[in-house]
Length: 215
Ligand code: FES
Image: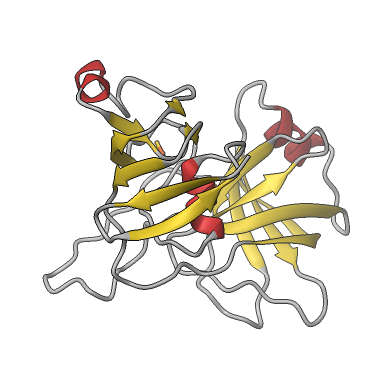
């Protein structure tokens, strides 16, 4: 099944198979919608549904309130098209997003930064590099199909690999493995870069940047 999603904000359309979220369909088509968590918890991808049928998917009340839902707002990272749609969604002026890639990588260094934070240095295959912007993140792809998101902790440099800071989550399956089972030279797979929390060229006013947390 293929549907057409028209963004009335820009007048542009993109296809959806109805199985992927509207956000994933938009990213695959090179559209630059703002988003962050892709998990229904931050609200960055909020947009208005003008016409058509969707499934909403799970989301938190802090991301989309009952009043917003009643007013026709949806979360693009959770909603899936069930018919042709018209939506009203802001798009970023900074052009098409960097292509999202799925790549293998090798663990080259594991450094304990504190009792519950590890710095993981990952090397990409020869002749491969990952283009990304400071502020973006990658998903580590687990064997069971699940994924875990981590901010990239080193500045973009085609010659360098990827550095992640991983905090141990109590009973966390992947972070427990990082602390107790992962070894240097092990292989991982990841997908990315994701996220639109980066400095936007079109900003014409001072920006105050603050960061907190790990992982
Ligand atoms: S709710 Fe965070 S990107 Fe959709």
